[in-house]
Image 1 (cartoon, rainbow, N blue to C red):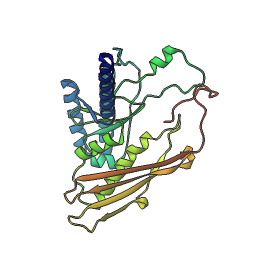
Image 2 (image 1 turned 90 degrees about the vertical axis):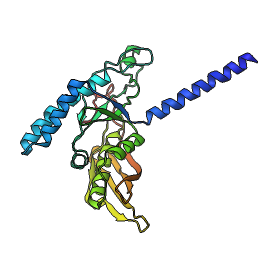
Image 3 (image 1 turned 135 degrees about the vertical axis):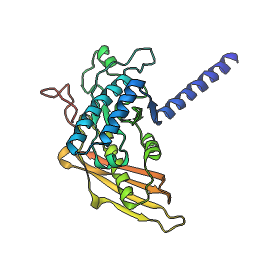
Image 4 (image 1 turned 60 degrees about the horizontal axis):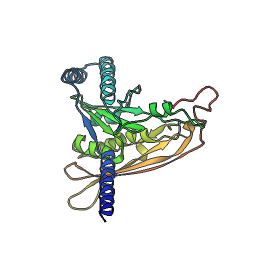
Length: 280
């Protein structure tokens, strides 16, 4: 009887741990930077905001991107696996450039961090598999937002993206801002669409957007947009997103429907004639 009760306790603890892990996977993870890096980052953000020419702004943005990459690497290499190992895998955060995101979040920068696993057909050595492991809360595909104060926010799920938009969006009180909000969301949503080493290119076109106020009290702004996959990038279909905003411009709901079909399955890197790679 005692053993049976003890087994129940163990199962309940395991279930609680699984639920906690699931909650963490959907959360927006925030990490601070060192005081020195934070001060340097804030100064560069202010300098970019005060830039008087596009050329000057581009130079500061490039300098800021270099610092952001250092921040992301320093944060990631501070993560540990469950067995105590420190994450040391090298990677290059790729800056996401987008006009809508720049308007919506002028003091932040977004980056994609890809940490692919093993694509080969043959059983790889255990050392290789261990070197490709990813510690929590990182996933294989990550979008990382670096804020004005050098705070790092990790977005790995639709829920974490929605949380970021809720807290960082300015009040969306016009159809123009609503369209920009949906366009910015779609730009980030496309970063999560991968099939082996194929990353489709998406087109976000104004003609695929609708915006209207619902005839209810208080009125709500409903904006729907679409990012269409380019068939030349070995995929077809689209990502459709609908956002609903309150009369005060608060984000109420987000609905995302990805319907992307890949045209073919490419050779994995281990089998590719000249060694495969992940698409840029």
